[in-house]
Length: 497
Image 1 (cartoon, rainbow, N blue to C red):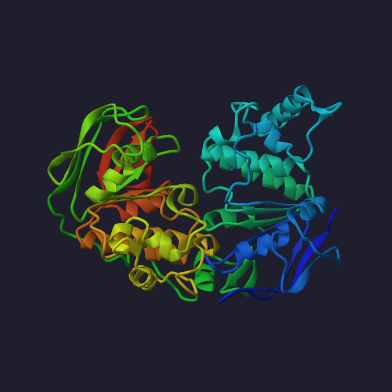
Image 2: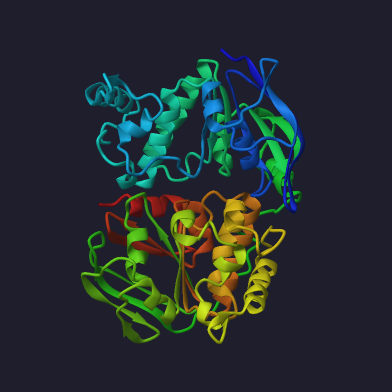
């Protein structure tokens, strides 16, 4: 059993970016250490060094005083290290049970022993209280929340001595978060070394013992969780006191005419939904996982078929056969899963920002690189996107900066966005960037854009939106103005059948 792990003077540089600069700290067994920092602070780089994805340029790691060099993720796993990333590492075309035991499949002769595999998987599923998951189901067909739980079960099954969690609760329901927290308590009691990355500060105080704060690749401070508070942590991460995030918002106080009018909408997942959205209004949608919020906006955006009902945009009825039709009409969607659905990860910042306006980027039949670069650089400046150049691959940016790239795509001066749909825009985003995004949403409204704002964080919806619509099981269960909404009143509505 490992007693402690140390990072010693870790430095890692990429072209134009010093991701980590002389970072040193120690994590004890039987304790949970939080790794905090804004997007781009170096947290993910450090985890990738731990997992064997990257080698440090300088410095190294030790476990119980013994130097460790992981040249690959396989080497890290062999050394009893597991990293559970925010971006899932499952093989979508394999079953749940094959993913959980992927490097240790039981065999009978030369074939996989599926009977034993299914039995072992059912034991783990039962232990996690997730017997509703079918071991034979393809991983790619599971909900995002269940995929995340399969990732966690895969690491748990290995009985690793060092486990790092990267934003593990972002896609989870309250039930699954409770399961995860109980698991962490058990791992802690077994003396495991645990690193925990989260932007949800309430979780940090609930599950961790110590906190390491990084900023711009450097170690800012190490703290005992019991001896600090949220404001102190925010100031350490951001470098300033951001005060009351919501009270400081500069809002739009005057709405225009109705921009979006949805009447009796029915899809495979939505039942008789009606609402209106005005120019300059921020309309929030609250609900538990599976309430139908994402399915609703996908249907409006032309991504999913509408069975019946009507959608009116700026007074005219619209019927979109595809997202392309919606975009051309002035509707934009920042999807919940930005990496899978919102970005082309293998392309540059410039390519991603201009992907919706390529015809406007041409000179004759050729792409005008100068024009494309100018639009991208304008977005980088407007949203303070941290990138050394607009030619950098968007895959290499932090989650918060990736989100800003999507915003830059839909709100550059070559777009005519009338309705902007933001589905979980702050998921996995640090507190400083969250504050920037809240104000950006309000600025959109001031420009006359009609905004739909979806979030699973009740506090966020209540304080950012002008009107809050509650959904449950594909239905609208009520609506409240911001001035009258409380967490309790909205929660009652989202829990109605």
